[in-house]
Image (cartoon, helix red, strand yellow):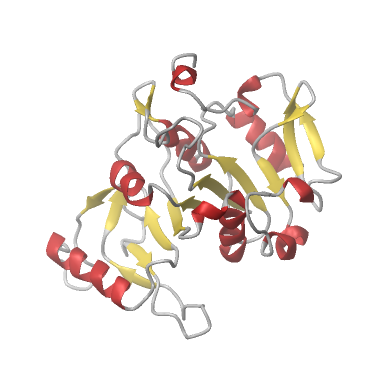
Length: 260
């Protein structure tokens, strides 16, 4: 199962980007990322868009450590050269893997090779650079994340779900980046009921997040367009009654941040 965080929007209802606004001492989006880190998932993915560079710069920082090949750290200028090469080779829109702490195998993070001409890469290559997320507290668990930049984010949520469906493994457990109050227990309850049909928590009958989208919906997800999202695919969704309104609360106004 792949955990997917949708974080590509521009925050138009608030009138400004919101995912990096502070909530209880941390960027809003950091709470969602931390929640997904704690869940038993096979893969973790975040889809960025309007504020991709700002979010990456705020949530992750370079973590230099010895290269397994030469025993020396990768210097910043070399990282810049690598980034230029990726852009030149046309792989900037391919997903990149970041680890939120140095991986135990000591091999760094992965970045994609050039496309094989059919829109697919030929396998991930290892690079001795790790990225550490800055906004974390306590003993927050850290894990490998696949970062996708959705260049077509203006199309709406459907385009982000489509990009995620192209890279996901198994079913998709979908979170929204502006919903920081989802209880971990609610997410685990959805995971426990995952099967061949959609599953979601519900507060007083209102469907919330995260939403589990089974593998059988993958073809439909890959054909999504515009801002339709997956709403039309949730017929027969199993609702898990939940007493906490955190499964439906999002941040649309600055005032919402002060009523945590």
